[in-house]
Length: 263
Image (cartoon, rainbow, N blue to C red; front, side, top):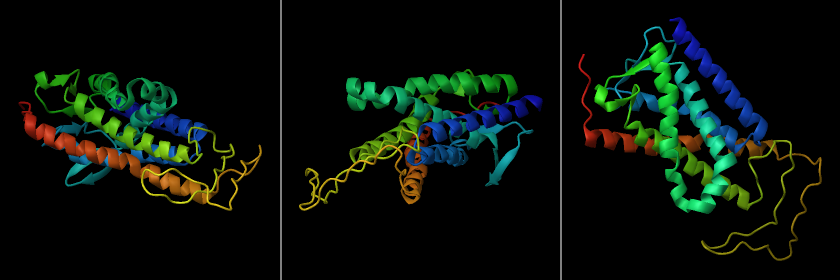
């Protein structure tokens, strides 16, 4: 039981560290919402970890967060989802998105598949080996260091789904001058007022209106209502990505037909 508690503490510390990173290095709006959304995405475990797909259960000494349909869920599940996906998304946006977009274009979304699978095997595989926190009831030839090798697809689709919706939302915001990967107290440049135009049309400044000046250093940050609205959008983005990933996993496991491990 002591090892299970240490794993729970590890994920609590990791989640708190991720929260600090998103609080310190973003505008505490869209991306902070994405981090909270990644944390809340643990509810997909109730679908994916059932007997029809991952066939996973937890150590009996685990602290539970909730029970649904007679299946309990570990309290460390949301913490691990938030930290694992959160650090992956932040690291990609901070260091990889620009170079990868310039070099690979849309193909860059395939890069996270092997990277996130290796990380999953190292982190979760080691934890299962050391503390037996959970177990996948699949035959040994379907597992790689305690992790289903089909996670190469399912976990990759999860991260890529979250990443795609987040990146595209950030690109829309940046078009209007909002840069999310900046400290929250940094003034936001105010773009020229624009009128709506047909799809594919160019943004134009409305006649009779001059572009609004960017705020001077030390000006007030963005209004709270703007941050709250972007935060709410951010919370929803991982749910969109993981819903798509869940559908892929359902069809994949149904098509492959992974057998149950012998008792």
